Every structure is written in structure tokens, then in C-alpha cells.
Image (tube, rainbow, N blue to C red; front, side):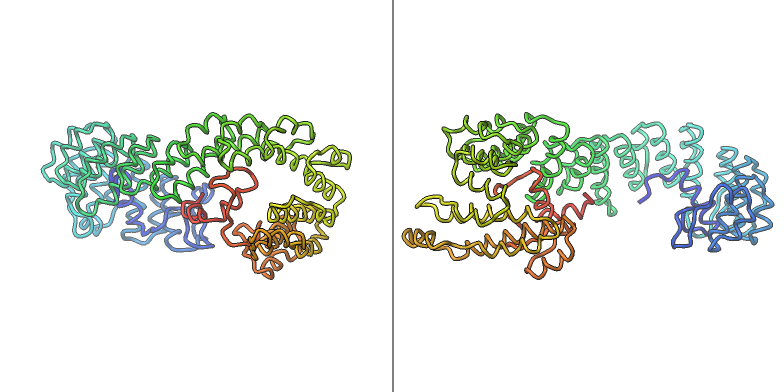
Length: 539
């Protein structure tokens, strides 16, 4: 549906249609299409080189109008509608109504373009009243469009009262409403379709989405009502307009692309869209906001994920106090806040909380650069981890012992130690690093404890091996290791869409908590169930 009929309609009718051009100049339809430059306009002889007949006619017409030279039309375009379009373009450019009489009799008799031409130049409605048509656009529509053009140019809306045809009057009042912004003219439009157009134009140009409700649901206008609320709401940056739609997501996404207002997220329909919204907006908070902005998020898990990301960014453990210790995010927050810590003394203030104290020691171990730092670590497993990393020796990891009652915890810690050592290999030696994954196993001591606890989980070892391969191959891919993608497939893995990761474990990967916005999980989220939304909306 066209909501702007005035000048655009006249130009389409009088120049493009008559000249036979079906593409805007410069748009082109193939590899040979090219923009008609000012140099070609100044030198019409160059129009001969245009790749298609339509482009040649468009070039001659634009050149003739630019030079205000009617001879370019006469000499280069055969008599008929194509030449008439060129003549009209020159007449409009020169403001010479007498040139309109040079149009062919066929054009004059079938569409009265000569009258339209004179009306556009003189702004005299008497010429509009003389328009008669045979086929194509109806006579009343042409007259109404002619009046609409004059209304736009003169701002004289009273001329609409001269019209008797409902169709012509509708086009005229539509133009009057557009140029004045007076909705009273919309009410004066007799034809429902143009009245709908009028409200559509007003609502979408002003952002006053409330007027979309005036569009009647007839003649297939359901889609226009949807577009009205969407365009107007986006213009106003007001999500309340979107909520008038059965499915507000497209409308809300349009607002989010501009404002990135996190308060919109709970208003979206469907958990994938709500999740996507948070992943789209929280990074904006991290970039320009403050951790206090996280408190505005109604969903606790999203709120805590936001706080964790700020804790990592600012290396501030105080942020983590806002997360209840009954949530796994509590420990995760401290782990992220410790990310850049290098002194074991920093862990002393957490000695009364064993979980936080161990987490802190693990981070110190991973950040250590020398054995001296390792020796100062008081948590023995962390000290062994540190030594293995400094010496780049995975065998040291096998000295880690947790105690009698946590054999699987010990398995996970040992395997993590081996993975960290493997990732320290030089790029050229990453192929050999994969062999370390095969050393992950249950020791006899672990097995005896598991048997004693009657808690056998056969898949646990295989899962840790897969995790090891996944992380190493992904590291290969990001490091430019030759044939990394081929190795991924050989391991039964799946390549991520961006070619940065290899999923060997069950896909999509699961995070430790429901919402993560820290750097190390962004890729996982993008490659999971939210990816279709990114692709659908170009985000």
C-alpha cells in the first residue's frame, strides 16, 4: 500500500512510467548496471553506452532535464510515451507549460499528461479539471493526485472543496493532512482506504501510535495496522505502542536496536526472545552503565549474571555480596572477581568461607608465573595445580588428592589441571596436547572410594575427556592451527557458525548458570538456542 500519493505518484506516472523505466536510476539490476553520473548527464552522447534501452532512455531524460534542452528528447528518443516522459521532465525543469503541448496525441488522449504537466507548472487546478483518462489509473484518481500536488506546493487546502468525486477528494484531503498535520482532514476523507492511509501517515510520521487504532480492519488492512504500531512505536521509542499487537516482539526488537532498554525484556513473548533481549542489552550496561543497573532486572538469575559480569570487569568481590550464597552464582561471581589476582594473601580474608578460599587459591594458581608464588599457596590441591602449570607438566596433576568422600570432585579437579596444562602448549604442539585428554581416568584409589560409596557413574570420565578435547580443539581453531576444523569433525564434534569453536560434548553447551554475560561464555550463548533470533533479525 502506498501512503504517500502526492508528488511521488505524479513523478512515477509522468516520468518513470512514460519513459518505460522500471528501476530507479543508479539502482540497476545486474553486474553491468551503473549509476548515471553527473558527467553523463552533462554529456548526453555518453548515454549511448548505457547497457540497456531503459537505462539509455532514463539517461537521455535526466540529461535533457538537467540541460533544459528539449532537442535531446526529440533527437534521441522515438516519438511516443517514452519521448513524452522526457518532454514533461524538461517542461517541469524549465517551468514552461507550452512545452507540454509537444507531447504526442496518444498521451494527451489516453492520460491527459499534458494537462497534468501544465497543472504542475502553473499550480492551476483548472488544468486538473480537464484531465480525462482511458484505462490505467482512473480519472478521479488522476484528478485527485493533481490537486494533491498543488495542495502540497501551495499549502492551500481549501481547493479540495472544489472537488465532487469522493476518490479525488480523498487524495486531496490526504495531502492536506500530510502537509498541515491536522487530523481533521483525515475525518473529511470519504474513502475508507485513503482515510486509513491518512491515519497511518500521521501516526508513523509523528510517533503517535495511539492513532493507529483509527485504522479500520477492512480491505486487508491487518498488516498495515501492525506496521503502523511498529513504525510509530519505534519512532517514539515507546514500547507501550507495541503492546497493542498480538505479537509485539518485532516491534520491541526495533526499539531495542536503538535504545537497548533492558526494561523491555520481560515484555517480550516467548522465553527465547526474552533471553535474547537480555543478551542483547546487558553488554550495553557493561559498556556504559553501573552495577546498580543490574538491580532493575526482575529475573534473579539474569540479575546475578549481570552482577558477575561487572565483578569480572571491575575485579570487585564486594559486588558478589549481593548474590545469595545459596546460589551457585555466588561462587562463580567471586571466581570472576579474582580473575586478575596474583597474591595468595588476597585469599586470607576468605579463610572463614572454605569454598571462597579454595576458589581464590585456584585463581592464584592459574595466574602464577613462578614456583615461589606456588609455594605460598596454602590450599594443597591449588598448590599442586600451580606447580603443574608453571612447569607445564600434566603428570604433576595426578598428585592431587581431595580426600575420602569426594572422588568425582577429585576427578574433575585433576582433569581441569590437565586441560589447563594442555592449553599452555605452543600452537605448533597443540596436536600432541590432545594426547593428554586420554590420560584422564579414575585412579585405583578413586575407584575404591566410589565402590565404597556405591556411587558408580561410568560416563563421568568420558565426559571429562570430551570436555578436554573440546577446549583444546577450540583453542586450535582460534589459534590458526592447521586442519583444526578437520580434527573437530574427526572427534565427532560440531563446528560453531563463526568457526571459533568445536562442540564435542552434548550440543548446545550448557552453562553453570542460566544467564552468563562474561567474556568466556558469550560464544556459547551465540551458538546455542538463541542463534536463530540473531539470524532472523540481523543482530
